[in-house]
Amino acid sequence: MTYLNIFFLMFIIFMKMLTPANDSKTPVGQNNEKRWQLISEYMNSFNLLRGFSGAILIAKNGEAVFEKAVGWQNVEKDIANKKNTRFNLGSGNKMFTAVAIAQLNEKGMLNYNDPVIKYLPDYPNKYFAQNATIHNLLTHTAGLGDYLDSEYKNHWREVSELKDIVPFFAMDSLLFAPGERFQYSNSGYIVLGLIIEAVSGQNYFEYIRENIYKPAGMLNTDSYNTDGSVKNLAVAYTGKDSLWSVSTRGIKGTSAGGGYSTTEDMLRFHKALQANVLLKPDNVRLVLDGKVSFGTGGTGYYGYGFISDQINNKIWVGHGGRAPGIYFEYRFFLETGYTIIMFSNSESGMPDILFNKINELLTIEKSQWPISVEQTETLPEKFPVKVVALAKDDELKVLSSAVNDQDKYWKIIKKMTGSFNKKDAAQFENLFIKKDLVNVLSNESVYNFMVKQVYPVRGKITGFHDLSDPVKIADSDFPVRIATFHLEDGMPGYLGFSLNEADLIDHFSLFVHPQLCPNEKNKNCPKISRMSE
Image (cartoon, rainbow, N blue to C red; front, side):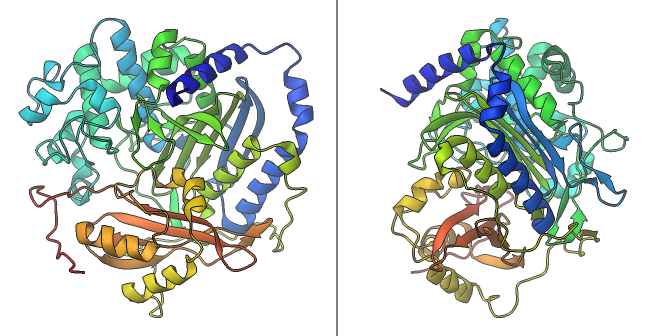
C-alpha cells in the first residue's frame, strides 16, 4: 500500500472521529491525566530553566483537552502570556493562502494546472510566468527562492502591499526549471497572494478575513499594521540565555507568513477545515494530501500549504513557522485524533525541543511514559529575563577564541558526533526538511558534510554566535543549540545536540538555511571562493 493510500485511509478515520460520543471528553481526560501532568511539568521546566515563553493547546477529536500558557506576552510591561495571547504565525499563513486558492478553484475561478501568466500577464519574468503553474507554487516546485535576503531587509519599510515585494525576487535566476524538484520558497507564496488578488478582485488580507477567518470564527486572527496598537499581541524576543532583545517587527504580514493568531483560533481553523466549512470534502483531501517529497529520503511530503509526515509510525498533517523570536506548530495526527498547537515568542526557550517531547508523549504507549519529570537542577522561582538592546551589528556575542576558528570548531564537532548513525538520521529526519543540501550519507560526519557539500557551494562559515551554555533538564541532558553561524552567501544555520550518560550524541540536529544563490547570475549572490579538496 502506498503512502498516499495510507494517508487517505487515515484521513477517513479522522473525519469520522470529528463527531465524538457524548461521554468521550471525560474518559480522554481521565485516561490521560498523567500525560497532561507531564506536559505541564515540561512546560514549567523549560520556562524556569531556559525561559520558554508561549502557549500550547492539545485537542482530541477537535475538543481541547489541555491548554496552558507560560512566560511573557511583554517582558518590559510584565504582561504574562495567556490563552488569548496573539502570537506570530511565521509561515503558518501559507495554510490560509492554500485554502484560499482551493476555494477559488471550487468556484471555477482558477485551475491548479494553469500557468502564472494567465492571472498575472504583466509578471516581469515571462519564462517563469509561462512555465510555472499554480500547482508548482503551492508545492514549492516552481523554482523560486526566497525574497528575505539582505536587500529586502534593507528596504522592507518601503513595502506596503504584496506587489511591492515582487521586485526583490522576480528577475532573479530560477533555482531550477519549474516542476523539477522541491525547494521551500516564500517568494512562491507571494505570487499566490497576487493571484488571489487578481482572481477575487479583493485585497489579499480582505479576502482571507472574509472567507477564512470569519466563517471559521477566528476573531483573534489577522495581519496587523506595525504602527497600530493591538490588544494581547505577543512581542517576539531573540537572545542568549536570560538576555533578550526585541525582534524587529517588519511589515504587517504577507501571503507567505507573518500574521497573528491564538491557540484557540487555530483550533477553530482546524475544526472548520475538517467540518467542510471552508472547503468541500474532496478539496480538503486535495490540499492535505502529500504530493511532493522533500527529497531527504524520509517520509515528509508537501501538499498544498500543508506538510505530512510520520512520528513513531503515526501520520500527521500540519504546518509550522519560524522567524527570529517566533515559533509556531500546528499538527494533527490522523489515526489518534490528537491536534497540537504551539506558539512561542522566546528564542532562547528551545521551543523545538519541547515540541518534540510533546510529540513523543502523544505517540508512544502509556507504558513508555516517564514516571515523572525529575529535575537535575533546582528550579528557580522565576526565570531572570532581562531585555537589552541589540548590538549595532544585530549579532550575538561571538564564541570564545578557543573555538572561534572554523576548522578547529568543526573538528571538535566531528569528535562529539562520532556516534551519529543511520538510526539517528532516520529518527530526526524531520529536522532536516528545510535544508537544501540534504543528501547526507548515513555514515558521514557533520564535519565532512559541511566541508565537502556546504562550503564549496555556499562558501565558508563567516562567524559563530554564542546562543547558550549546556543546561540539564528533566530526565536527560538538555538538548542545546551550541551555536548559530552564517555562511558566505549570507544565510544562517545552527547546530544542536544532547549527550547521553556515555557522553555520546543521542539527539542531534543540523539546519542550513535554503540556498538563495545557486549561481552568480542572481544579482544578490556574493562572490564565493570555491574550496579545493
